[in-house]
Amino acid sequence: SARALADLDIVLSANQGVVQPDIARRLIAMCAEVAAGGEERVHTRLQALALIRRLTDSADGESLERIATVCREVAVELREPIALLGVLDSLRWGPAFNDSTLTAVLAAVFEVVRVNDLDLATVDHTVRLLWRLTPRLRRGVDDDRPFVLLARIVRRVVVNTRDSPIGLVEQREYLVTL
Image 1: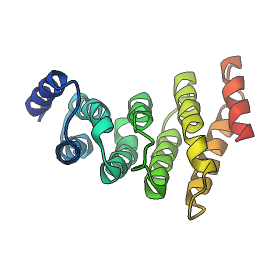
Image 2: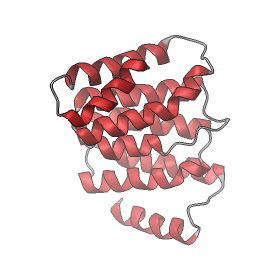
Image 3: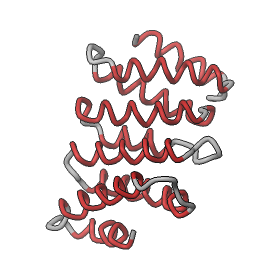
Image 4: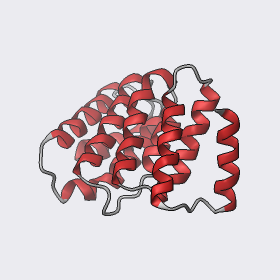
């Protein structure tokens, strides 16, 4: 798997990361399988996530949801919050980003903040990601699940950073205003 990922990295570099959506869907599925695979080394799984991040510009709605799902699924095992939040932050919020994708992304963010220590970098990345999602949330969704997930994320971050260093005050204040 590591060798195939290295070869894919070379091909993506040659194409400047631009591929056809149907090819991107297959490549994302392959990388998601490697990232989710428990028998792979952590480095190989992180390499797969990095390649997924490079493919997000070409991803369709199905692929966007798959990316969010794999980030949620591997959060407990990998314990790499910055890498996972980085992948989620790289998703493009275009027409393919529907209510189902929004819910999948928020579920992944919740899982990441639930299972990891909330240091300054993790909280900062979480806040920036939620800030980017706010306009999409304001447009409305068909069910309450995204808002329930958002409330859980905010509660987890605010409660668990209450006694944290001064650097988190600004992020906490933003979350409270959400």
